[in-house]
Length: 331
Image (cartoon, rainbow, N blue to C red; front, side):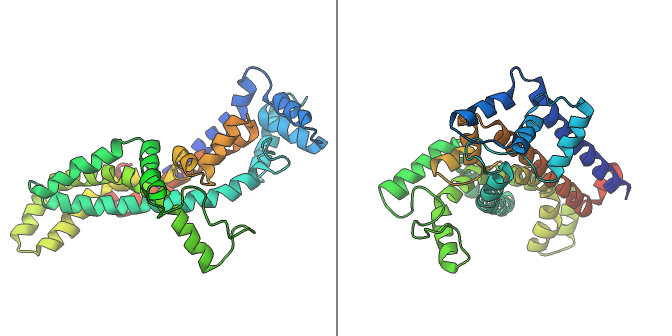
């Protein structure tokens, strides 16, 4: 229990530090982001209610005339109530609404693709590790080559071969234009989402599974030479049991820790990939926010990414402590 209590305390303090930095950084910036945002809204003839103006000034660090401590407590109250301000890009839509609309697309695409790449890489690593020294080891350079290829270049190659030269898959968007009323709960819509998401997902899988494959293969080679594996083999246990129960179970532990970090960054999306395929995820939303100097939207996205990374790492710490009891005694 001490291990879990320490983990909870550590992440609670880290979350508080992240929220505090999010409060103070705009106040340390030169100029006044809130005045810039309000001036931009005024130029396009937007009517700004006093409550919205106060929220913008509080979140972006403008002087509201209140003591700093009062501003800080009010800021925390707004954050925990889900008030992340309003967006300049799509005023008067709130930042929370925009993030809520984009987040499922990113989690669905990048999350599933990351999980699939992890499973393929781990399975391939177990196989190549067990067959070390054979021709199967030749798969390693090919997979690492794909990993070293820039995301945007691989995405453009897939678009060229599968959307331009051969119109097998659509090039942009997340679902078919026939769904004019937007997303809906139907098998036709789900099929359209899978069809449109094939190339973006393939980009993520091809560029990331090589790292899992190489890491797992090297850990398998190291684990298979350990004494307890040799002892299991000497007892006459089946090769499959030795490989999976003894070797792979221990070799996968570092990969699980790395997978937790990867899951944390799923919410950040693949910015370049989403831009190439015009996919309506968090990455594309962040690019729009930067292009339009939408400070509230940028701040909200960065805060959500930070919280998600902390939550993913916290969950993986708990899982890691469960599957490896040594962590609870040494952590």
